[in-house]
Amino acid sequence: MKSEVAENSGLDPSKRPCHVAVIMDGNGRWAKKRLLNRVKGHERGVETVRMVVRTSRELGIRHLTLYAFSTENWQRPKSEISALMTLLRRFLVSETPEMQENGIRLNTIGEIDRLPGEVRQTLDQTLEATRENEDMCLTLALSYGGRAEIAGAVRAAAAAVKEGKIEPGDITEKSFSKYLYTADMPDPELLIRTSGEFRISNFMLWQLAYTEIFVTPTLWPDFTREEYIDILKNFQDRERRFGRISS
Ligand code: FPP
Image 1 (tube, rainbow, N blue to C red):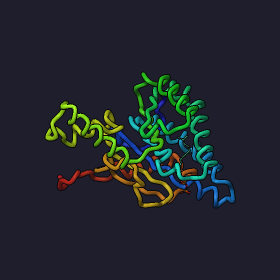
Image 2 (tube, rainbow, N blue to C red):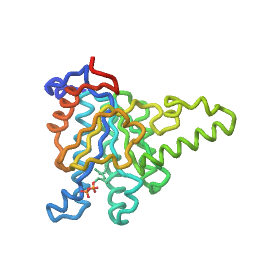
Image 3 (tube, rainbow, N blue to C red):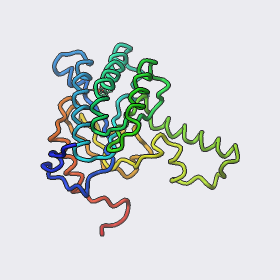
Image 4 (cartoon, helix red, strand yellow):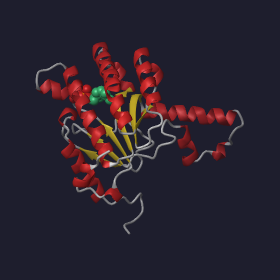
């Protein structure tokens, strides 16, 4: 793929975050400000998703994880849930060819079994079609909750102890992380949250331990490629010490 953005972005390729995670927030407020139905905000939000996926690929970011639907989102009105599911399906169908062209593999984290059958079917098709792609991994967090993920991992580790496969003393941070949805992924280096809320909202609680966090007041549908690149530049200027002192 042509990498003009990467060349012209002013980013230092050697300091590119390997994994960017995003809490996409503010679709509802974007719509409300315009006296539109909330679903219109989600529709515009999908355009921003396309832009962020494309830009990440162009910049050579290896992992992009998007918080598309939380376990708490099931409490929204049925009509909004159903609209989000429809948008997700349409996105998967329309983007699969471009994902193929650009070497993007789809991945999911979350309680996928809770999603409607048609969505699971479309997800399976895209997962299968993009399985061999190696240039970037796009992970959609769907029906995802960080505490539920950790509780599930604890259950799996406890079961392994009960079956005699491991000893309690074998459980370390490294071995425990293999029971999480993100077993084969690096932790996010950068978390972006739009719409100005300073919250993690039950997103990747284990994986965000040392992640740099950037909160922007911009509502998700208004988030632009220029702002994304500015945030990446800001990330490059930060000194990541992981609890150590400055060198
Ligand atoms: C938060 O806005 C956004 C969501 C709950 C869903 C995000 C979904 C999309 C961007 C579209 C579908 C996703 C894909 C991957 C195709 P909000 O509704 O909480 O906004 P508010 O806080 O202003 O009410």
